[in-house]
Length: 74
Image (tube, rainbow, N blue to C red; front, side, top):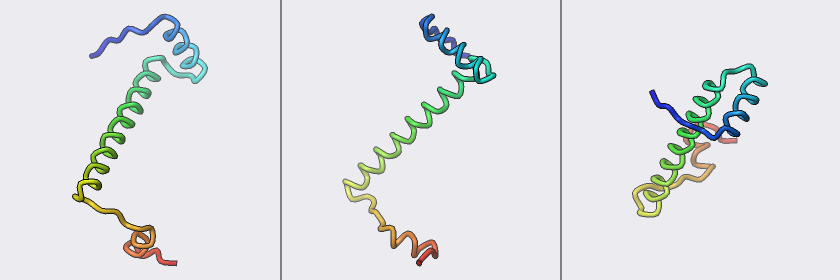
């Protein structure tokens, strides 16, 4: 278990928002942390793919190629 101290003003704001949403403050914090971690993971993956593209270890496809590959030609 992780315990985190937040400034009183932020805690009050969290409590007000959570109550208005019919949720507990800890539920809101957990959801916010999960969203933040997903964003960080997405950024890391995007940066890794960009490096691979710049170093020639991967390539891109045009929209037309993707559509053709998935049988979506118009």
